[in-house]
Amino acid sequence: LTHLNDRRTCILSVIGPQNSGKSTLLNHMFGTLFDVRHGRCTRGVYGSLIKVTRKEYDDILLLDTEGLLGVERTDTEYDRRIVLFALAVSH
Image (cartoon, rainbow, N blue to C red; front, side, top):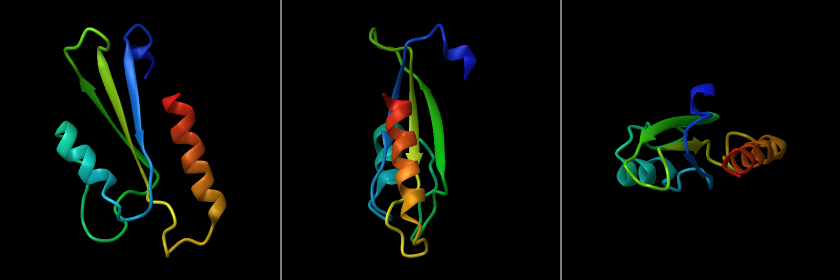
């Protein structure tokens, strides 16, 4: 991502519970191709860089995060780390 240093990049992270439509929302709003199906699709954090023609930004970096509060995982520390990473990168 070092080539983004001289570009104005908006970073948008989506976090929320498992199966709440985070990937679907990004796909519909930005035309991305994040994997969508029933159950847990996203593992960790996926990103997509979109070039835009706006005066405010040159690019938008979309971060799609793994669903929180999943029944398969009981480790709440992992959920906290996902949220912290998404917030820190977007900030």
